[in-house]
Image (cartoon, rainbow, N blue to C red; front, side):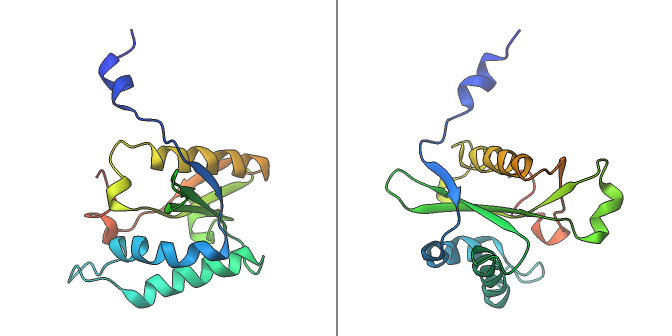
Length: 153
């Protein structure tokens, strides 16, 4: 029997998930700044935000491995980002298939989280894109720094 409560709680994201574009970078800055914070102080880490944005920018030009996707709302505003790449070698002991991918940088704007379907849409598109590139599984790593901002919220 299908749990009716669970199926009615899931909203479908009405926007689109597409490849990251250079013009999306400014919209992503405040989203990343919301979540990339010091574990000790809870304060944003602007240098790390800029490092992540630089990696994303370089990926657009094919200068590094990750592939990034963004969620774009009906009004064309960018409200989330997710990426994948060939895994860091430290992740390989946790994989089970010959060509794994590693999920990186999954962020959704605070006002678009919690049951609105944005994260689900990003992950679904990531799975499709990774499969199309020949990846056979997806692994992820979320360090303790994200315990209060990304685990089970």
